[in-house]
Length: 418
Ligand code: GUN
Ligand code: FE
Image (cartoon, rainbow, N blue to C red; front, side, top):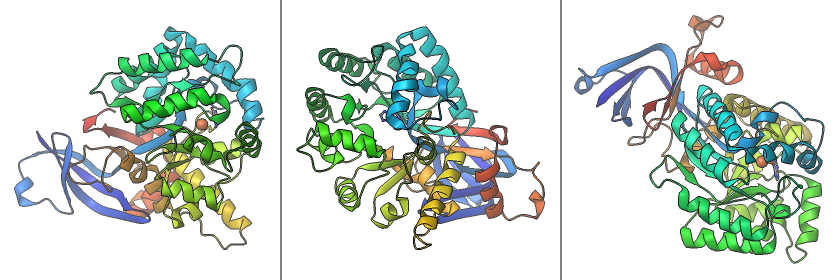
C-alpha cells in the first residue's frame, strides 16, 4: 500500500543538522519510508495523500531509560537523593507490582501516555516480578510501542517487600526470557538494577546469559557520589564503577548505561571503547541532586549519547520536555565552566532524543529510506503568530511549548497509533 504524507517535514539526520522541507511530501510503502521530496514527484501522483498541511511532521521520540513501575509515583518524592529515595519511596512503589491486575491497569495507562506524547520506542525497566513484566510487554505492544523491556534483577540491598534470592532471580529470568514472544515489537533486555543490587553470583549468571543468548544489557552507572563509594567498597578490586559490570561480561557493545553523571575521562574512554550507550537523564539528575552530566564532553569524545526520562526520578514523561531539560542542563555546565563548554542546541537535543536512540533499534539517520515510519505530527496553528514564523522557529517552539494535545497524530513502526 502506498500513501503520501503532506506537511512541513523536519528531521535530524546528523548531530546538529536539522533538515526542513516546507510543504514537503513523504512517500510510504507498507508503512516504510520510500522517499521525501519538496514538491510532489510525477511518479508519486495518484497515491492517497494524507493531508497535514501547515502542520509539522517530525520524528517521534526514543525514551532510552524509564522505570515503568515508578509511574504511580511520578511527580512525587522529590525531597531525597538517590539511595535514600530508593529506600523511602521507590522500592515500596515497585513492590505493588507483585499484583498483576494492578500492573495491567497502571501499565495500560503508562503506554497510552507515552504514545500520546510521541514516544514510540523505549528501553524500559520493569520491576523484579516475572508476570507483571510480561504484562508490561503486552501493554506496550498493544499500544504500539517498540523496543526493549527488562525484568529487573535484584538479590541484595533491596527491601523486605522487594528483593529476590539469587536462585529465584536467575530461574525467573530464564522463565521470563522463554515466555517472551519472538516476533514482537517489544523484546527482552537483561536488567541488573545496579551493582549494589546484585551479588557477584547473579552478575556472573547474567553475563553468561547475555553471551549465550546474544542479549543486550541495561543498568545504571555513576549516578551519585555515595553510590560510587558504595560500589568501591563492594568491589575493592575494581578501580572504577564500570569495571564491576565489565568483570561479569555486562559492559558490552549496546549496553545502555543510565546517567554517567560522574564518569571521568577514564570511565568515558571505557564507555567509548566498549560502544556502550549513555542514556542521559537530565531531569532526574537534578531532581535526585545527582549532578549535571558532562554531555558536551561525551559528544566531543564520540560517545553514543541518548536521552531518557528516567521516570520517576525524572518527573517529565514527554520527551520534548526531556530535550528542553537536556539543553538547560548543558547550559548549567556552561555556566560552571566559565563559558568554556558549549551548550546543546535545539537541533542537537532533538537528535539525541530521536535519531541517536533510533540507531539502537537499527534505524538509519533521520527519516531514512527503508525505515518503518516513526513520526509525530504537531498542530501548532493555534499558537500566536504562527503564520509569521519560519518552520525552524515553530519547531523550536514546539520542543519548548507543545502540549500533548498539540500532537495530532503518531506513527510507530509504520502504523498510525494516535
Ligand atoms: N539506581 C538504581 N535504581 C535506580 C532507580 O530506580 N532510579 C534511578 N534514577 N537510579 C537507580
Ligand atoms: Fe533509572
